[in-house]
Length: 225
Image (cartoon, rainbow, N blue to C red; front, side, top):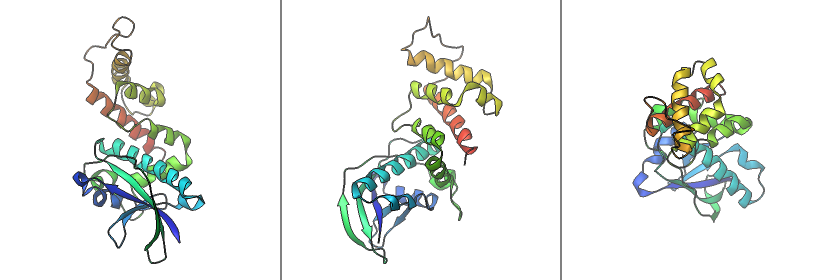
């Protein structure tokens, strides 16, 4: 017998699980459909937990990381996926017991296969989850992605986390572009104080800035998976 988390999507996202499942097929996270057409999230990390409550916390943490991966690589924040129950499965993949819980929402929209590149050996998504499981810095990077629409403060924090010198050293972006985005984010996070934190010439929009910051974060993570 083994444990798994039942996951669901709202009716408006009925194809969501079909879309992302091929990108999450590994020991760290597998999303698949049971014979009764319910979707489950499985992980080798679940084996260490003796109580259902602890396993539920672990499933939510893993789902939170999946959310960060999907938000970072697919750029969508409004389609919910959630844990609805923790179940025990027998050797025939049949549910023999279930404990239902409240849900945690996550988001995704564009075709996951086009971005996460699922293969027989894994995907970008599972590689990032595996790295986050053993590397605290990758886990921290995912936490910067957040669970809501991006903000100027978030853009600033991502650049500060990566560091101007590292971004330039590894060729992620030109220093002038990083300065332009960082200065704009700093201005807005200080409520538009133009005296102490002026805007640069030709400041980016929030949409441009967060996409720039997310690309930097993806490049940094790529070097750790």
